[in-house]
Image (cartoon, rainbow, N blue to C red; front, side, top):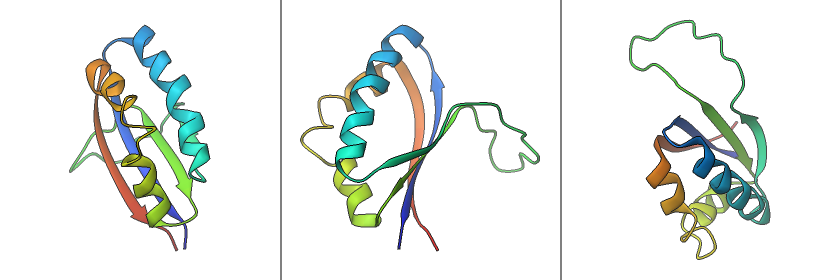
Length: 96
């Protein structure tokens, strides 16, 4: 069953965040990740619980692969670039 890593990102330093994007993408792909959404326009219909900012959705073959990416040694030095230059909410969901 596929799993989806979903990230809502408020970028605070766009130039540095571009470095993060360039480094993170090949690592996600190494773990079977396929970017399905990466920014782009949104039609926000309701905001009772949350107002999204910039959405990224990466599909992985299964929950273990998504978690392996997030916890990987390869991603560990890249994660602080994201944290230093953006505020994020990150979740992993099982697909159907």
